[in-house]
Image: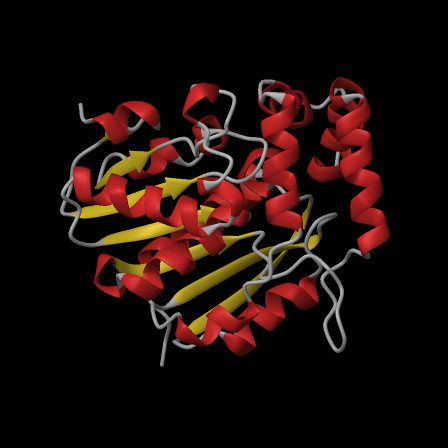
Length: 270
């Protein structure tokens, strides 16, 4: 195993001509795909990895300067694909990883046959003529809560993000992976994500994009998914699901997994 693979806990499962890369969002790790993986391994080569900063990665490897923008994560993704000698893949990105995949595709579009975006947003902050869902003051309050008592913040944020009560398996799972992050790293990553603005990049994304979104999501309003659809540079399609929450692949797998599989296997009709 190469250095990059080891650092990101890369796993390659299944076999097939087609490579599907699964990338998780903030506060989770590759375990968030546990309901999807069994449906893919029979016919595809499946690549799983952990973004640097996830609780499963070595915190000593987290470079605050490298990960001061999403570009650092895009470089990581390209390094993983290069080390695995992946020449083309279907990239499935949850939350911020959808944008990371989009950024990576602008420099190496040849590596991506399509990007499936789940709960993705190009910008979380509201702006003139743009609704991302958050005001700056709300984000400052969120960061301060993380800073002052990370454990308490995790307990409160998890059910809001997942869209369930603390007793639900999905909330407990998200709480576990969120809690596993080192607090200072979690705060830094959250600040970079919530303050990012990828809108100007969208027109340079020419790879076909499949946008999948919950109708109710604490972090991403439906209009943000629609904005993605309208501003991407290549073919795109958006599907709004009847699900509640920012991690629908974890909280509503019976509804979401068939939808993800359909978008993985079907191309956009022109």
